[in-house]
Image (cartoon, rainbow, N blue to C red; front, top):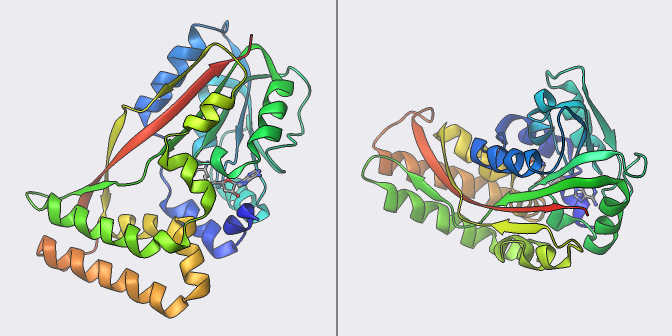
Length: 270
Ligand SMILES: C[S@@+](CC[C@H](N)C(=O)[O-])C[C@H]1O[C@@H](n2cnc3c(N)ncnc32)[C@H](O)[C@@H]1O
């Protein structure tokens, strides 16, 4: 059911346009964990719930082969259209049934995705496909983001908080995993070599138009749009007007800075 939240073609094209790559700090933490456990060169990485591939393509320089998988055909279609490297391929399939051999994967990643899966089945599948000492990395940004602009950051962040409140009734129950920093998922991982990091804050500069686009990629915004299309469009228009007024500009391309707090779960199979 949850996966249907990402099936729409228009939603997928928003994803392609407005989702950004995983933060460098998170990538560095993943690779320092992997470096301590696996010999180089690395062979095979799988990015599960890859959406339109932003979290998949960044893996290509480190591995011989990278596979991005997603249950949504529309997302995979967009991922395939994006410029990429020849060692990256994509497949539309559920995270709980990844079409790769037993003990074949060095690193499995899931960016802003693991909370949507059937965790019990997925962790069994992860255990099947990881090599001995193979690693997993589940990460996501957390709610309550800050928006910074000159000395008006408090007002800017308040607008974002207001949007989160409007969208709250449309939030899927599985998002509780994100709100609790993936604690339950971390506890369910059957390996002793594991850690959970919640201290990484990333700051991303983007035009105001990018921030408005990013809000529209949220699954809860898409649910709002489906159930109350006029109100949802009106909300975005109001948010844009409030931001422009606070910023004292008429240009939607004026840059703002989004501060995101992240959670990262790392583990290695014995
Ligand atoms: C928030 S998006 C994240 C996409 C991408 N990793 C990124 O960081 O931009 C979550 C993705 O998980 C996918 N998804 C949800 N449930 C899934 C499942 N059971 N198996 C595979 N993919 C799933 C959705 O289709 C969606 O593309």
